[in-house]
Image (cartoon, rainbow, N blue to C red; front, side, top):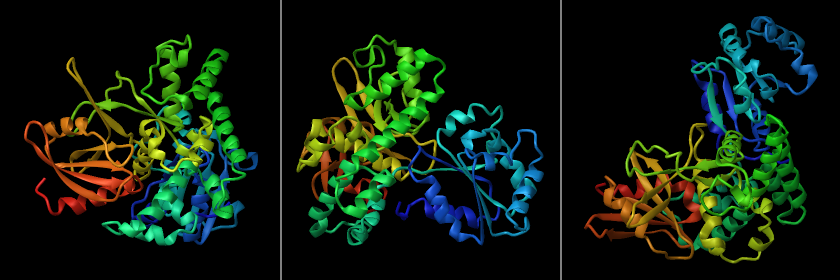
Length: 451
């Protein structure tokens, strides 16, 4: 598989350069490129010790009651290295196979403060449940996501478009080509193995088997954590049915089944822990702090839009469409916009939210909210070039600022708007392919405004 330039790489370099450095855990779903990224990062060091705890020859080095200093000294001895060397990276992969190692790394660092330690694995959240006292504050954590649109462009060699995306404002003459590339990205997604195959052939042919392999591996990994056969059957039903849901989830009788709300919601929370499906909950506040209301129906956000397209059987249909925003009232564009927002967050605590206002007279809903400069910025994703903004106006009536965003199939522009109550605000219109640049456009527009 090709080596891709990943945005998280700079965060790894920053971590390496810290004077007081803690062991680093890289979170993320299986097959998003964690191992490949760390192997690239290892080139920043003189020495590299890679371990995979699913391999018996590596797992034998660790014991739950073994002295941590002895473990590290044995590692250096077997690799013919000096523990005093300050340019050594120890990479412990598939750490979920021996969860107690996560707890031990704090002692590795205390005994060998110059050693750079990175851990990675899949379904780590389930492994952490087996640790009585997780070393909170003793480790650092970052999350790796599927390739963003930025990373996709570099992977397929579209460096000129990538450069244009970094310029604010975006050049109008580059709009058409960038839109076509973004549509391709939206259809195939950002799973590294898929993008690698596409980058090599610049064709969508021959990648269905790769999707099938990834999707089946997720399902087989996930059901390992079932408590009994009944839960295995429920897990299989939920993960096979979920790709076809287009609206907010109703847990009770999910997908027309006889399953109860409590057992279905528990499976979805496990999928959320596994980072296969995010549960995107609504909130009702127009200002910080914004607290998700977990008693209300959430939306589903798959790890990767391309994987969702494959699992729901719509990929062939989407490939034939000239305007993906027209699919199911903009569902796919809302999904890829959410994925792009997630991609700019490296904290494992981050979860996207949307906004609702529900009463006897009306129901208003904003697709996404974005935390910026202690403000909550409303984001609407509209199908077509235009769309009604009634809910956006309702949000801005109560918002303590004057900035809002509409993502659509159109070029960058700004509009002055006024609500029914006389509140003035600025609407920033952005093409969906600029979703990850929202923070920069907010700064760009706000420089000329009193918000």
